[in-house]
Amino acid sequence: MARTVLQQTDIARALTRISHEILESNRGAGDLVILGIPTRGVILAERIGQLIAGIEPGADPASMIGSLDITMYRDDLSKNPTRAPSPTRVPRNGIDGKTVVLVDDVLYSGRTIRAALDALGDLGRPRAVRLAALVDRGHRELPIRADFVGKNLPTSREERIHVRLADIDGVDEVTIEG
Amino acid sequence: MKHLLSTRDLARDDAIRILDIAEDMSEVSTREVKKLPALRGKTVVNLFFEDSTRTRISFEAAAKRLSADVINFSAKGSSVSKGESLKDTAQTLAAMGADGVVIRHPASGAPQVLAQSDWIDAGVVNAGDGTHEHPTQALLDAFTMRRRIHGTASRGKALDGVSVVIVGDILHSRVARSNLWLLRTLGAEVTFVAPATLVPVGADTWPATVSFDLDATLAAVRPDVLMMLRIQSERMNAAYFPNAREYSRQWGLDDERLALLGPDSIVMHPGPMNRGLEISAGAADSAQSTVLEQVANGVSIRMAVLYLLLSGEREAHA
Picture (cartoon, rainbow over the protein chains, first blue to last red):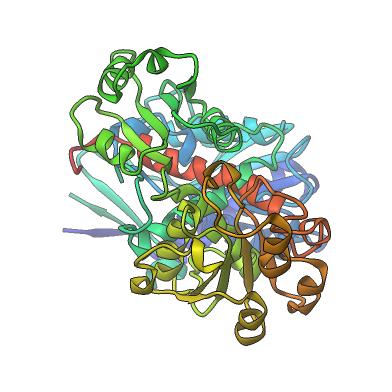
């Protein structure tokens, strides 16, 4: 029994708000790098980049958006079947001295973000790292919290959250199941 | 994937998957920190019963970039020269806790024996066995071709319709055999060119064209890829051709033959090269030559293979 908790307009509204919040906390789009975590985080990062470019006239999405694969940095590699990694793409000017905003679809245990922080450390030394998540469903297992959240969804561990995005799944929605 | 023993039984999707993962691995070698933590705490043994520097250091670099611990075991000066059997060597390595074994052996089939035995429960990578196969070399060659042909849009692509001419000692070459199976799987057309004495019995049953005349083949095929094999003097204990100069004149890639190739054709060599014998210095150093790319890509391919074999649970789908 899946229940829709965010519809297309809700997702669009949340991403617009997150984009404004990112610009507010960074005081503009200068030295900003937005890295999505595959798979759906990358699409969210691209959307946020486009929104920021629409708000700040000087901002160029191409030099701001990238993706950060964390497969090799997971702490459960040896407990699951082998996963194929995804590409990591960093904007041309790198991340040294930049403010990096990590973007993921669902924030849950926090282990993905821990892996992302390790991966980031191998790419360079950002001035600051922030975290944006479309959905925060709680149940953290590590001391990690998001700076920008689309929606807080109190869940039980048995429930499953599905984020679907038009680019991959043909529809924009967040559902909860279980 | 539990072992990589041969390219003959590699499915097309699996081959493309390895090449795609190698694309991701090659990005690592361009960064500041050239290391991934994926195989932290795993032990890879390089078990070399035959001399090889390039392949061994390539596997060593690959394992180290994935944070695995590497033990190098070469048969010379080891207990093997005192008469230890493969079984005892394997059990010794198992007792030391090896997770992966990279094996090169002069006997065709030795890696298979090791993989199918219950002596050791480790992932086995064939790094060259006799005149049988050398799968990671074929994978890195295919990777190099794919990159030259498709550039940054390589991911997910195969080599359909690419024409490959492989010249030299087909008889002794495991590189030629592994390349044949893999290239056919990926959709390429393969032509072998060699002196009649260096074509193995049964080559007519292979899915490849066999020719004895390099100039005629180059004119007829107009290859996208020309791969020169090394004349392996250590295996030349019979008179396969009159002398080196005659070989070079008939089957070597010299500057005139290089000039006849199309500007987009690439020249490959698995190394080490005998300059002036099978390949001229001009051809080896030309812009069409991929010799150094092949070395760099070798590390990426071996990282991909080690990652696929050794990360993940060692589930029982053997």
